[in-house]
Image (cartoon, rainbow, N blue to C red):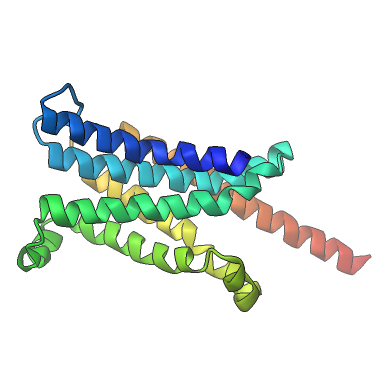
Length: 203
């Protein structure tokens, strides 16, 4: 029941976007503004980032609170991160680039944050493909090493958002602070584990 509820909640941003497009097409009130295509691309990107941060938050939250159910939805949140990142990329290709790939190279050179964002997306692909029980059994210890790439993705995403910002950096700063805290929690957790192992060897 908890996983089903989480799944339904994760679909809400997509449903909200579809509703906004419907309102735009029918002349109703919407939040897409004067440049609906750009706003839709940004909206999907924002939700991809939020789901990425939620995914990273699950393990520290479980350690702090002991709430084990949170771990059950970590894989789902990660896959929704990939889903919204994919929609973000497709929206850019269809709505902004209009599938004119001849201008893609020029767009990348003119806007390096696109390269950063695309690199982050490419790193998400192996994580999404191995987010299943079969991959965990197949890769064994290498699976955990591979999925540490998610922290690299988070750093690239913060750079992407910061570079994209033009007037206000408040959102980029907020994401940067959250990612830094989550990274530090991971680093100190690893160091604490190594300290525990050293003590066991001495004993």
